Length: 174
Image (tube, helix red, strand yellow):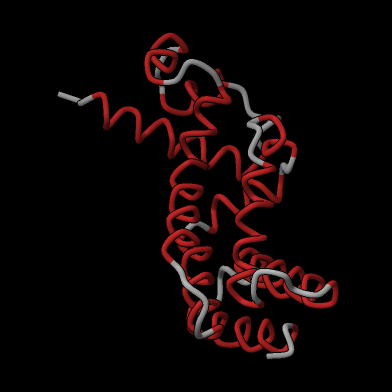
């Protein structure tokens, strides 16, 4: 017997694959149901809409990121960046989905949350009131690390993390 949670996980996995292949906005619930060989009503039993399904895929990343910045205190910048990179690597498929279709963040009203955690990470790295130059450097450092997670996902984690963190520290002038 298939438990509802198994079906829900299967729906999320199929949706993630399709979202990565063709983008969120170009993927219909019918396509997801067809890929799984289930009916649209069966899919609606688990998710009320495509946005609900997308949110269920993105939410674990958002929760992990919120916990990450909430638990951190200013300190070792290298360790903070290494840990942030590991978190981003763990959720790299979500990064890829977002980069492929950034309008998804707007549709799900997540843009402000993302800017808020970026500000909090910057404050952890550079203090509560970083200079304009510091904020720009943090944008380059954190954005560059996020891009490395996506662009170099086929390479070994340790190799990418080492170079990305070193580059981020250089960008931050730390």
